[in-house]
Image 1 (cartoon, rainbow, N blue to C red):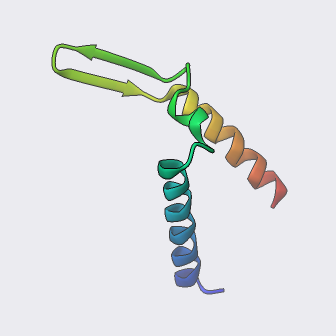
Image 2: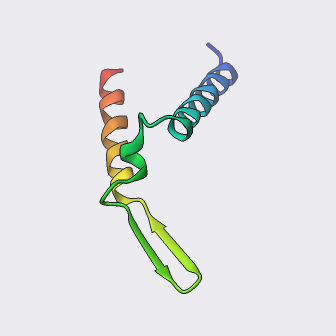
Length: 67
């Protein structure tokens, strides 16, 4: 498989995962993670997704070990 086709396939996979996250409750743990910090100061809202980053890092590490 050429590099261009690989990039297209990976982009398509990212789009599908994004749609699943947005329109299903399958990934609800990523939306309301207790380790995701949110600060509101006046009109400014700061969101720091620490827990989601940790979960995704573990998931990616497991996938990479399989391949």
